[in-house]
Image (cartoon, rainbow, N blue to C red; front, side, top):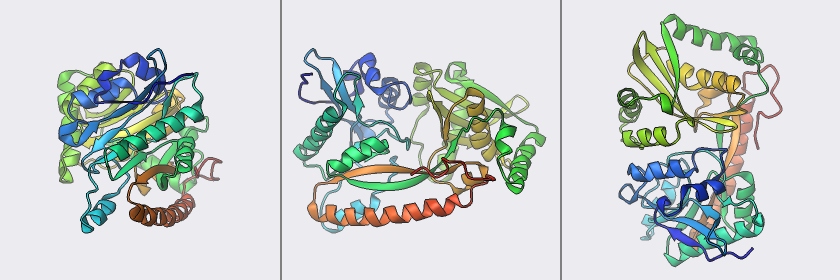
Length: 388
């Protein structure tokens, strides 16, 4: 297949949704044109917030997109969940500029997935090399300090390693569906002590009179969005931060992707008191945001974890990714799962130091994941507990 030279797009709107989505696939909602467009049009991922779109696309001889990569020129490192603030500080100490940098990621979304999007009839390895080379060429032509690829698949991480990028490793906590017929069947795999604790947490919420509604994007009204967005925003304000996402984004993505957005709304009587916001893929559920209008015992665990697990069992989803960090997820059935990122550093001195650091960091992450894996709540650890 003959391919044209790579092009850089200044907006996802410069490629039609059908062509982009044909490359992105349907497994995950976060790479779809509608999701990225909602981020842009709402102003959440735009130049004024330090996320300047520079998506890369390669077309065949007829102009049909054959490969693509989400790409942003970043003026900071916020909203990424792979932390390089110390790298930026080291650059500043040497009188060098770390920003702007180039980033391949889904804004505000620490979910592993494809980062090189390929059409079905291309030579995957060869075209991947072309996409990676084009991204590197762009970073060098713009004299950017670095290019970072966050949360790629294992296969893409291996390709990036071969291309000379520096690999980092991190640990999240995911839940895996081992064919459970019910939530009770899932709890039956726990030790007696852990099972008792989980049941007690759920009972506290039920005895408080709290009930849940399961709504999808198409079920949401403007007035209900106003209520639950205030819960979401308060979670950020309580920690001294502005929310990454505005109300306009949620309304846009709710309208554009009504089936992929799912909310668990907790209420006392008819009054909503909390919300957990999820996205639904073809194989997995992704927990993203939480907020409450008060302090209710065990409600966070119920809304964000147990309700999500029940949803996965009911819908036969194979995996539940509830977000980054949080050893408190382990007693509730989530297990250590390793993730990756890859980094091109233009300055050879910094590249050598960062490569050494990443290798030492990876050994620490492996040891941490293995140690945490000793504390999962199951009678006997399922085969897939520690995802290397």
